[in-house]
Amino acid sequence: MGKRIFVTGMGIISAIGKNIPDTFLSLSQGRSGLGRIKQIDTIHKNEILVAEVGFSNSELAAMLGITDQQGYTRTTLLALVAANEAVASAQITDMNQIPTGLISANTVGGMDKSEIYYYDYLKLKKPNSYIETHDCADSTEKLADHFGINGFISTVSTACSSAANAMLLGARLIQNGTLKRVIAGGTECLTKFHINGFNSLKILDPDPCKPFDQNRKGINLGEGAGYVILEGEEALQNPGRIICELSGWGNACEAFHQTASSPDGNGAFLAMKKALDMSGLKPADITYINAHGTGTDNNDVSEGHAIENLFAPTIPYVSSTKAFTGHTTSAAGVVESIISILGMKNRMIFPNLNFTQQIEELNFSPVSELKTNIEQKHVLSNSFGFGGNNTALIFSKF
Image 1: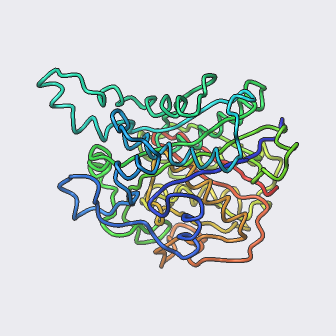
Image 2: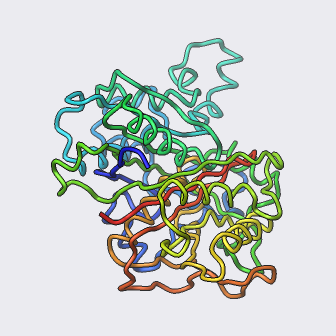
Image 3: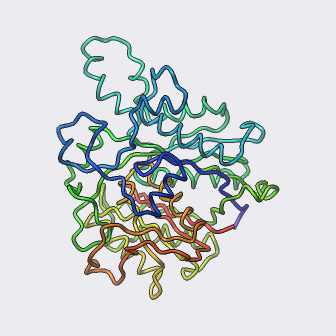
């Protein structure tokens, strides 16, 4: 184990809240953010359930004090809301007082605007500020400009493990002495491209998703953003700022299939095992696993086998929180890490909503009701991306 890494700030926005307090309230009350599509003009508006952030772009811009929305995509607006909260909670007053980096994840980028203006652009060849925002790195650059960060800036795009890998990379940069502080996380907005793409894969559940349930039918897409402030051992000089420790991480790219996980969960197993080995912990030390748990036939059995292979005979508390937030894809790793940290700090295990029947191939069931007064010293969050890019993060109580 090298230099210790601490979380000193967190910020989040999703369908269940525009900040940390709202998010915690929704989780503790079992309130899901799933509903019909309102923000996107699509033929699927009345057919597909999603978890949308409950604010229009204009409302998000007003929340941020942005008077001219030109060039600001929804991806960027969501990122700014969450990152502002993270920076404020870390009590950062001078961003460049110590070497600070920014690592932000997304996959859809500015597609929400591109799909509106692209055909006009081709037809009229008229310059449009949103064409330049299509690239995934645009939101990262705007975040960097907003905070005055001009050192290490990077964008990670590994599908649904993107934000987890942003945190992993940030931690490694601190450990090797390249940076002393990193803003790390991810952002993703819903788009027609997003919805149509997953719909073509036939993995969208028309009803509220049921992760780890025998009768699961697929995922519900969501949108949102989350960021954490990672710092090295210098944070120990002011321990009151420390929320928890990022004590272990592991990544394994199994490349079994373009979209499917291996039946035995080999990649998931390796990612979790690497995280445990790095932290110096034993499987029995983990109290709770926030599973990737998408609600698809493939993922839940594969991940379930990986959990059993590593943790049996004593399986930790397990739940997927995607029935709260939807699958926020590239932001999922940080959204679910923050949820895991909130549970650990408040001695709660948030439930796997909509669960009724154990999967036949598995020997455990997820937590189906809120559990309180549960001491948690170490929690694990899983994030698995298309192409078999699997990442596991361990957070420990400080």
